[in-house]
Length: 113
Length: 113
Image (cartoon, rainbow over all chains, first blue to last red; front, side, top):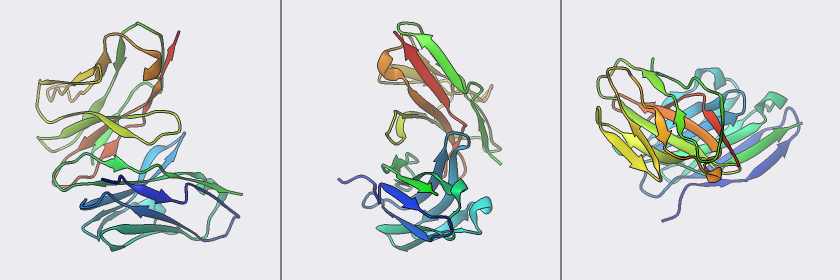
């Protein structure tokens, strides 16, 4: 089975641009998570979907971050407008209902200039 | 809400010495699930250990941990560190009916020859 896939692997954006990151969860998984990872803050939850329904939308990230899950096999994370402080690795993870283990994708490294 | 505390940001030790990384948690739920994830350089986090059972040792790849609900702890141990153990280790908690994980800040383990 394919694991979690994320595209692009690297993204460089100018301040103020709109960027869209993509994630495909493990086939059959019910839950999908978006995280931001930085050396200072560690792993921060951005959004959590269960069966395409938004369960949690990280409060501090609501204003410029929007995650969507249009179908069970694809999710996007839009950052609009980007700021230099958004430079981080964005990780997508999925899990099967009741199993609790999360499988992480390879991540997208975002650099905002 | 739930929280996980990892007291050490960086642990440096010599190859062959024992490893112990601390993890304590807080939750109102009586049946928490605890996890250790490991993240090697330029990789994404992957599950190392998990435990649902009080006072039962769980082992994987030479590492072990025991969930102690009485002290709200789930420390990670290994009898003899290897160079390849150098990585970032996250302790995580799941409680309630969702698969959402609450991560600690992470402990970087650096094993030197």
